[in-house]
Length: 328
View 1 (cartoon, rainbow, N blue to C red):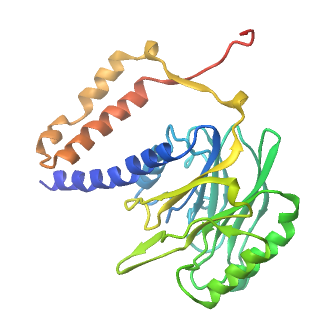
View 2 (cartoon, one colour; view 1 turned 120 degrees about the horizontal axis):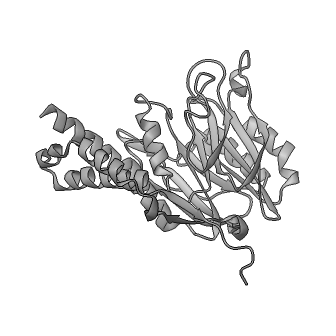
View 3 (tube, rainbow, N blue to C red; view 1 turned 45 degrees about the vertical axis):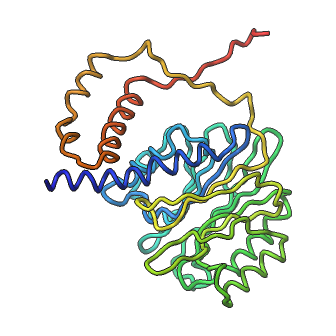
């Protein structure tokens, strides 16, 4: 009975974390544009890497091109290979002193991205400098834009740092997008809120979202922001809860920048390369008796679907269709 209850808890988490965010984003995001998202991960490698597994599944066959992570909690003992996600490169700005925090950005291999500025080592620095940031230049075709990811620790005012970095970097870019967890509740009147809004006004920046993104017992707050200097640059915006993954919503948007059609691979499932013997062995290893012990029909369906999808992804390989160069 304890085993069944344990699975029920896992199934509920998997359904809310993996299936819903990926499905919602794939439905809402556009196929012809660059798509990005942000999530405060509250430690990517938590729960003995099970959260990392959920994170990877969430972005398998996803439309998201750029994944911005705050509170990654990565450090020098965690390699890029450990947190690698198929189809993406990773850019990291780990917190090198103390425990926790950190920023990383996953981007598609086909995108030309380079780091412009990072917050670096915080050793010996005052509270005013503890705001973490990672700014990168993203190039697509002949277009480019500045993308910044910001994390402000609780009780720290990030306005001065944000003002400083935008002063240094913004003049070189016509389009600017800044996202992250600013730990400044725009739904609450406060000195911190007023300072942040003043910085945004000074640089002609707008916050796209206005609904709460962080939820806790008895309340909510708007901490995770998507900011831009051109409202028309963000074609659509939305957010989705991921309660088994984070107390923060995942925010995501399609940007008004067209994908490079030459770099888009047509993917297909190669049914000719299925290893049926290995597939049969994998089927036999699954403890299907658990399925009949689950009384909740939704959870039973999740159990069945999760194993079938995992087998499908493992034994029906995904291939890129390369167009013939001499095609008319």
